[in-house]
Amino acid sequence: MKKNGEYVGVDEKFIPENEKYVDESILGNKEETEEKIKSYVKKGGKIAKGIGIGYLCFFGVTIVLVIGIIIFCFTMFNDVRKNQNEMISSFQQKQEETTSSTQQKQDEIVSSVYKQLSEIEKQSFNSVFEMYSGTQHRGYVTALLDNVYMNNKENSDKIITVVYNETITTDLNKIGELKSSFKQGKNYEIMLDYDANGFVNKVTIKDI
Image (cartoon, rainbow, N blue to C red; front, side, top):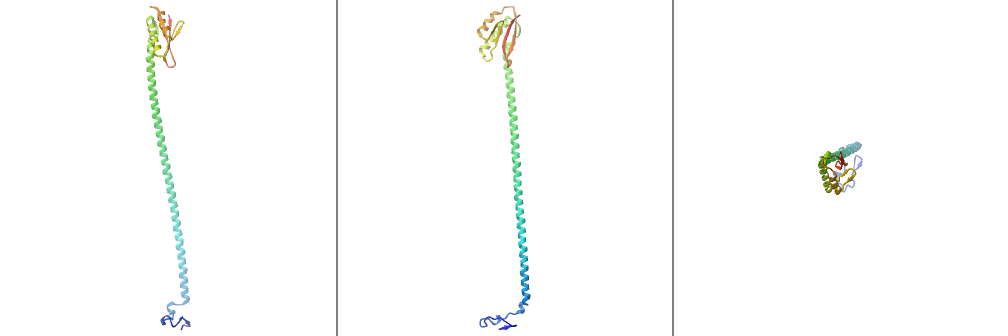
């Protein structure tokens, strides 16, 4: 069956009567309908294209932000590590300086004490002989020889040489024998010599 010059039914036996015709007034003009469809598809393509560009821009900005954050965090980490290393180095340097200064002070104190002890020892040793230095009579000379005798007997590291006329000796027996060479009522000149450390190491007796 036809309407408006077109056949709209496939099989009139199976197509209901109300479905055999298309009311073109509902669809409107065919060309106008095709234009609307094309326009819709075209607009839809533009919208889809716009949405695609928007997503690309969004992802691009996101990636840039992520990279920026990573670079910032890496820079901050390096700065923190650098500052930490500088602090540790500064602390170690100060500690070394403090240790060095403390050690230096300890060394100075020990050296000072050692010098003082050495000076006391030296003065104590020399005083036994220096009290006889100068012009003395026989009694002082023999007393000096007794002190030299005892020193040479007990202090092998501080041996004193006795010089009188042609006699030059450190032997204990000869030092003892020299005492009989000095006469009562006669004066003698006693002179002392010192070693490199300042200790008496020689006694010279001369007749006046």
